[in-house]
Image (cartoon, rainbow, N blue to C red; front, side):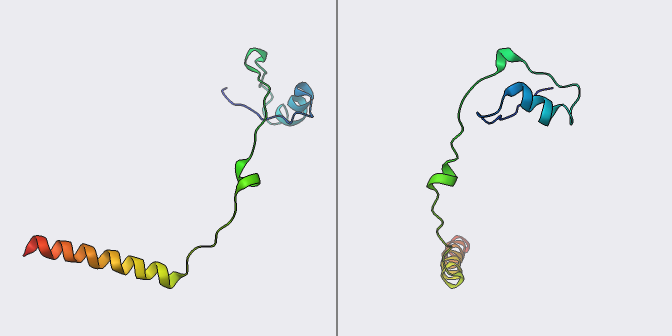
Length: 79
């Protein structure tokens, strides 16, 4: 089994293991040599600022412009 768990720093690893892991995977074990202590920072939660998408009409205009350029290039190849 190669799986990992992110245990909250406030929880005891063994208590978390007995409460959350063993009921779902009774044959699981902890490899204490590979146990690490760290902290995960959710950058999206702290730094993400939502920007609404552009209006659909503006996107359609850009797509039409790109399509027209492609058609012009294709017409130049076949001429």
